[in-house]
Length: 223
Figure 1 (cartoon, rainbow, N blue to C red):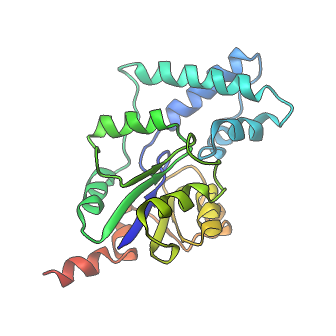
Figure 2: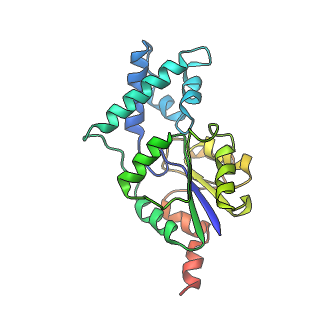
Figure 3: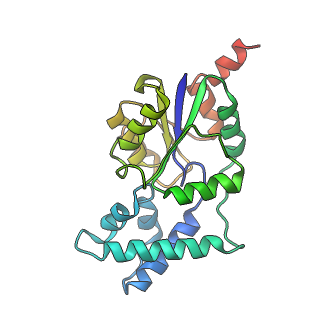
């Protein structure tokens, strides 16, 4: 058995517009200038307190920004016009992985458990993920806690586990947990940053994941 753990924002879902808009509202609510779009996206993947600490420093209004962000994010996401689309090919690959008898699928994300529940419900992904690790369950990336808990829950060790994500935080977390770090090029951190953080490889499309985890070979072997 092989455990494949997926990040959410920037890997499965293109949520950058929503994230940037919610950050801008949070900074405005606290009377602060908003960071640039590039800076806003650089902290995607961290849990909220760690993300805002990175943006304003430990002496800044971190708790106030985090709460304002939660409120703005929830309100913006509830708007019917809100777009938070899956990246190309994700829907097919998630279902393909979840249906494979030799693959166990998981999530590790800086989102809250409520945010993941919204994602799963929206896309009809109930029961596809054997383990879901969120900002409510473990320390923020790049701490290895999410992956360690995922492996404990599934009974699958690091030699048979891969972390797939778009940020340096995902790659550093994978390295700290001793699992395969696989980067994706369509997310929010540049490819050189992923490689510097320890990515074994960086895929350009989600279809490139299949041969990396032996999925193509397994399909061929079964006929």
